[in-house]
Image 1 (cartoon, one colour):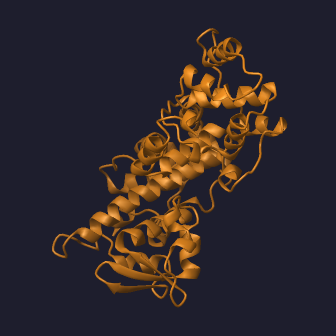
Image 2: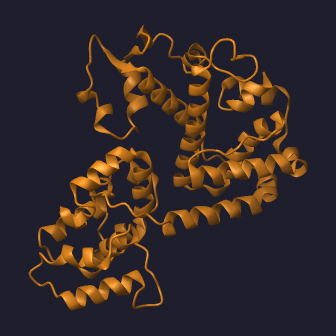
Image 3: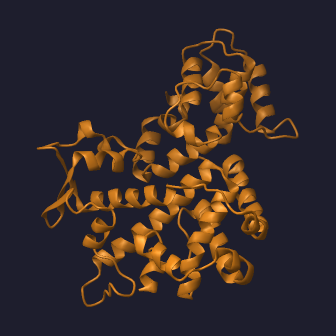
Length: 359
């Protein structure tokens, strides 16, 4: 049973198993470097790859790495990390349970490593809310569907686009698996971050510092070469809209949108073309300012302002739910890009001639 819990550490039974064995995390982080190493890898791989990495060979190490990883996430105490970590754990669990569900009865052992659909439905108290209507067809009560689908991007998840009948929403098997992944993500995210006892925090400070460094690099310097205005943060959407209406932007607003567009892969020529609609447009000055922000004619490549700075200048507008959970416009855009399907991105890019200038 411990192998099952190590494979699916979010299960209530896994938590109870650790509690029943009276495992002292303080002792673990002091005396078990393999657990700490795997926990750190869990969090860093979640940030870099959106999954939690290869499991440890030893079941106990894998099982205990999960609560230690949650401690590390809590120590760093950044909402963007909480979200990314929870999504990565949920994505890993999704990969595993889909594999389990596709396995034949002969190949699967629920006692060792596998889950079946009824296990998952029971785990989240969904047995009465979800009804099977065929091999690949299910119905889910609308009151259960809405909270599970609320963080899913894409118009197909909006209730207005679903066939609602007798208080239930029809979903196919793949959609049901996605909703179960969201149930797992919500459980993992719940309670994070929490207060970490000082003795444990002291032992894990080096690992937490390593994660902070990785997070800082990913948030502000990760190369994003996809330009999809539909996925821009609301503040940048608003500034882009003002440019395209020919409005004259104050210097701080102009800097913010130019730095943002440069950071997501637009060339100087493409950015300059955006400003041509402005009656006071001067190509030479616009090109100089853009190259300066890009670091072409200056020793520094400038990052877009943080959310706090955008707020102080009055450029933080039309905030949505995701805005409440991220510290930087680039982090917002990265989340949206990560959540979008490759096909959707390609359709948007083709429809816009590969850049925002096609608007």
